[in-house]
Image 1 (tube, one colour):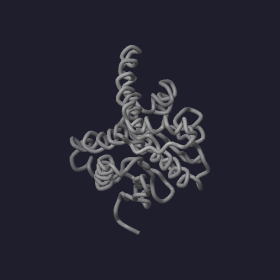
Image 2 (cartoon, helix red, strand yellow):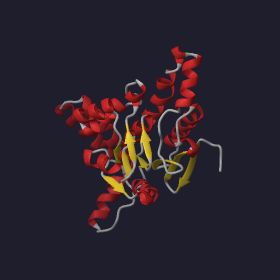
Image 3 (cartoon, rainbow, N blue to C red):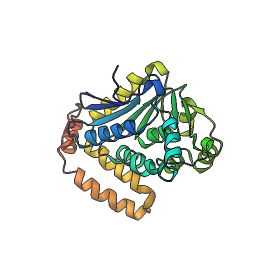
Image 4 (cartoon, helix red, strand yellow):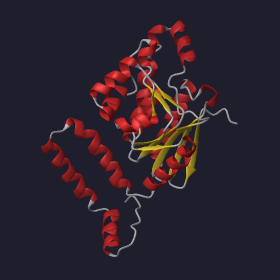
Length: 263
């Protein structure tokens, strides 16, 4: 076993980022948050990485903030105990949500609080049907952070988001899929394989088109239809000049599978 709180593995074009504090169900302490940010920065800047898989070790995804460390921070300096929200969580969520390559979360076991926020910041999720998810924040007298007020609301709608945040009741992976958080739910024994398969599929795809699609979808909440149409036209014109597009059209006409290179 290693004491490294975040493991980074390269599997072809897929970078597998694993939260690795299994004895704490991958609770996020300072070292883990710093290591996670560094790993995500590395894969975001690595052109050989075409897709990212985020997962947790030891049968859990992530139970959020390490409350033992947080209690120490409250006792030592309550005025700065929440600096981590902007200093650590916000950059990690931005990296997951905005990096120019698709990110998949493979979730089994507990996925709670900031852990749920990390999963929702990813582009796609593979959930164990018996995973246990919860917002958890109000249970300790807090509200959402790490983007959860936005990502959860967009996934499930305002009314259900209020219910999940205010009541804090746990829900399963199967329920999450029914509510729109994920379209992929599998038995917990299949999560690791299904996550890697989905990430590998994305890594073999048109990564330039994926990056553009992520940006358009993220910006759609701030645009009216006219602005969206203009933005789409601009991006399509740029993608239309890529080798990926030209090659895919020729492959379609020749009835063969296209090969995408991200250019």
